[in-house]
Amino acid sequence: MRNLPSRSGHYPARMDGLRFAFGTLTVFPARITRWDRDAARAGMLCAPLAGLTVGLCAAALGGAFLAVGSGPLLAAVVTTAAPAALTRGLHLDGLADTADGLGSAKPAEDALRIMKQSDVGPFGVIVLLLVLLAQVAALFELYGESWAHGTAGAVLAATVARLALTHASRHGVPAARPEGLGAIVAATVPVRSATLTTALVLVACAATGLLFSPYDAVRNVLAAGAALAVAALLLRRCVRRFGGVTGDVFGAVEETATTVALVALTLG
Image (cartoon, rainbow, N blue to C red; front, side):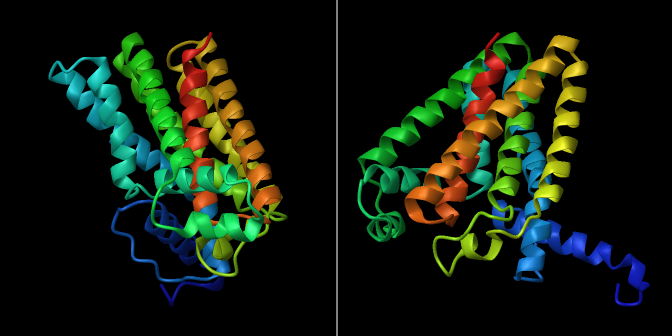
């Protein structure tokens, strides 16, 4: 790789980004070779690819259960459980911690300290329960339509949820702490790059929907847009409340986008 011409320097950067994305956002064996802001920028731009992989694995597991006659409810449960296992539950943990921080009504410094504690408070428990129930219920509806709709929904939600992390890393979004994942990725992604990545993901969502019908193409794009919009509102609230983003906030943004995307796909 060192012998490649300089014009091919983008290739190592992309590989560093892929390793960063898969190494921080999944349990897949990806040895992170660089831990700096350049690698973080590339990694957050590659985040939707990590989400796509997680979604495909979750959908494959749900499809396998359907194939052996489990029914759509159990398929929905295992499809919801798979991303938690493939991310070590970090995003769900971040969601619970962020809910406790937001619900504490304490100053930013105290709220951040609450979020770092290992226990989960009542706000975190309630939000976790409702989010997981909503995801299972939505996937149950999608699998009830067909295996293909359930699969497409799981993959779309996982991909768009990681795209929300790309936006959470864009320029202008500060870190709440000087250390941790939030600090290394905060404000690394140029707005133009985030916009281009979003356009590519939305085109892919529309193309996937066209495999079913023009209506499904529109529904996919609207679901993705709704997920990104709600995730952006949560991100804005967290930045105002905590002074910036943390790893926990990233988890909350991801799980929120996942849930909204799945619920939106069941509407209409």
